[in-house]
Amino acid sequence: MSRGTLMIQGTTSDAGKSTLVTALGRALVRRGLSVAPFKPQNMALNSAVTPEGGEIGRAQAVQAAACRVAPHTDMNPVLLKPCSDQGAQVILDGQPLTLSDAGAYHRMKPELLGRVVAAHGRLLARHGVVLVEGAGSPAEINLREGDIANMGFAEAVDCPVILVADIDRGGVFAHLVGTLALLSASERDRVVGFVINRFRGDIRLLESGLEWLEQETGKPVLGVLPYLKGLYLEAEDGLSEALTGRATGGPQGEPVLNVVVPVLPRISNHTDFDPLRLHPRVNLIWAGPGDTLPPADLVILPGSKAVRADLTWLHEQGWVKEIFRHLRYGGRLLGICGGLQMLGHAIHDPEGVEGAPGSSHGLGLLEMETTLAQGKQLRQVQGHLQDGTPLEGYEIHAGVSRGKALARPATQLNHGPDGALSDDGQVMGTYVHGLFDRGETLSALLAWAGLDAVSGRDLSQDREAGFEQLADTVETHLDMDRILEWLE
Image 1 (cartoon, rainbow, N blue to C red):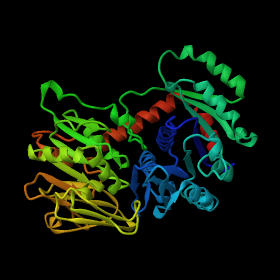
Image 2 (image 1 turned 90 degrees about the vertical axis):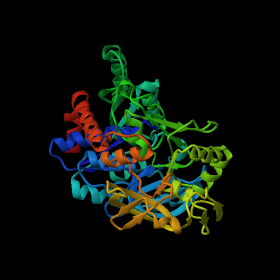
Image 3 (image 1 turned 30 degrees about the vertical axis):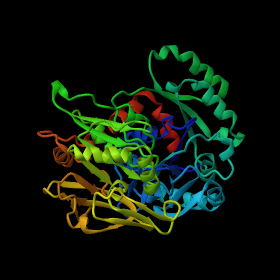
Image 4 (image 1 turned 30 degrees about the horizontal axis):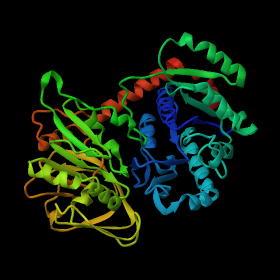
């Protein structure tokens, strides 16, 4: 088998694959190993920019941080970013390749497998240990042919597989046994053990089930991981965790800042808002379809993978009128990336970069227009706000904005000015993602929005604490000796 490679596959989406790779990465690094994360194919709208200027899934960037290495495009050679229900942008080796529907992408898979295997080989040569995350479930019958994300990849590089299942969903034994039953004989032989994730309660009540599972399948249960409360780990894609984390008031009756974020159909990089969601004096409200925008101090238009379509959707929801009413009452409005583009007078897409070619009227709040074009601006950035507060983040966008509003930029970055701030100071837009991650930047922006004398929460400390908690958990609850044997 491929020496130094171990793959984590799940019985379902969100079974815990990404978290387990993150946990094992930090645990193995603490043991002195050089480790890299890897995901052959990822489908997500949360992405990250690598130092060399490539785009990968955000989960792999987080896993790289857990492994104490810089993120690299080899860690996620194929990234799919949905633009509609039928189509997605294909990112290959960190750069945009094409817009594709499901049928066309399926025909591309044989060629992509070679690129995926090559990227894995480069990582293995540099690090010696590669932890691979699968996608969804390996038992999706309709996706088995030409698979590059799960068993197709595992067979191509000849690596062992651990199968993880989420007991909190219910039906964990059916998930595990049923998944095995739908695999081929060679694929079943490749599964070396099970991990059960998110267990609550008395482990003794589970033991008879574990014994049955081992007897029924002939596979060992490598461990049962407990449900971890209060763990901070950035979401790979969905908003489900974020929607559960709303603050309701500040400590000891302190005033809070009410922040509303419309959940656009193609919202991207919603991890931008994790620092707000976790802040004790911020009440973050996600406004979904059919909602009325509640009274707020700050409304934030997030990034979008389909800006013109999401702008149309804002109008259909009646939210554009509510945003203008919010401004009339003195509220603040911030646009990030696609949200910045919406603030201008027009968005042009002559080449059909994000959908059908054409132009759309923007909100007209900033004197600027944006033209979408092939290729992307992908870079990590540092700089400062207009008051001198330092910031850092990253840019991922296809549009180029021009206009008088940009003469009063929102930020000054290492490569030049960015975004715009309206003359009255009420409306701000920027292309920078990760704007709130740094504590002092968060404090300054909350002060701009109306929350005074507040300290910002630095997410890097929360993330590092989460890595250590995860590593401690797998060291305590998993058979690490057996895992090390497979890697050796």
